[in-house]
Image (cartoon, rainbow, N blue to C red; front, side, top):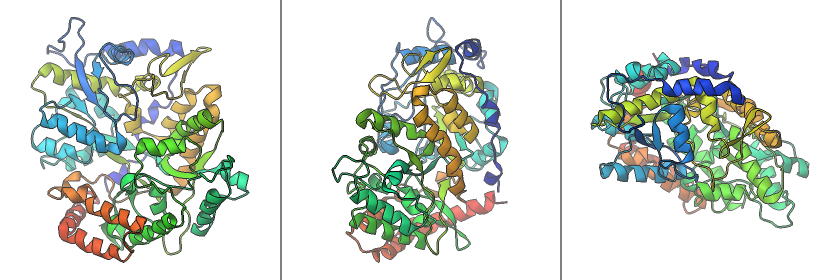
Length: 528
């Protein structure tokens, strides 16, 4: 199977990055001034800089405006003016809504991260650029960083059926998402790390009843998640449910590639989660929380267990310390053992597409987009892009650059982050380690530790790399409309678990049978 052959990606060569102030400036300037674009009028400004509107996720940081500090930083390092209006990410829902409005108004951004398979329809309609011949000529760094095996999958997934490239893929060689549990709470209550589901339930009960945050109030939320049953994958994982950020995915069940939402595994998981909810072991607002609300609860030192990126726990830990003066410990939650099931945390090495480029009639804009892609995928400047603007995102001390804690009131959104889209465990760990100040080390080191620990419990699912085109004509299935309705009502106790069988029947009749047929045809093709 092509996808399974990716292995450890070639970007490990980017591991040995230097963040010493004197080591990067010359490299950065040469990278920024490199001209992959020749023979075109690549400038619409007196200074030779072309401005591009670039959309990527923003979780509350300031926008990038013309002449701002981050604008000037990208202009210097990448040779292109990057402008990004504020568009709240909110799990991708608000982002997609705003993106659709821009597209409908004929104001598509010059370059953007596509979500939920939107790139397929845009490619078929000719709205985004065919990059097949453009990337090798004008953005060779992109072609070099991403392995040939991955490009082969991208071409096989071309929605036009012509074997063309319409996006730069995201790739990941390690499990980045895991269950996280307050080990300092366990230690305070004299409890071991749970091994079985029964152990886990007892831990949640202790978190609920025994005041582990020590404030004298019964305000602890043992576990929880977000709206649309998202970001509570740890509760499904113990039942072997292929799940990616709350979205059911595809894996082999009983010898056949199957959508995990319609499996007996999902039914058992929903029954368990409904009981947790009924017994007060979950945040009662789990199905109402948006990203900001759920993170705000976590930052208030009341959440005992949640699901997210294991490496970014420092964001929560530093906010807890800032807000409550507590230095917590978020450790990886081992998959609780459930009789009759083999649990795992889902890994998808073929991540969602990273970037698409507008099929711009303005050749200057199109060439500038390719220039931006080429320069951002120059591995020599990834540490510089990670650090951002001095004084805003990082500070210098004793000749070493160290990242500052996030401050959404002052920091502009770091929109150009190729190190997240082409990632290895070693590179990620080294990047955090080499840019951390002593006063932040206690929190950042937990993320580095968790990267290694989480790999014990992860599995690459069989649906890794499946194209969104399998859902063509069945938008409600792609958007999980029916699943979210039934899962939500079962968890809330509004539906008995017996209604799950009704959901499966409706799902199959509303297009699930056809989608499953297409998925298995794709799987047979790539498994060769």
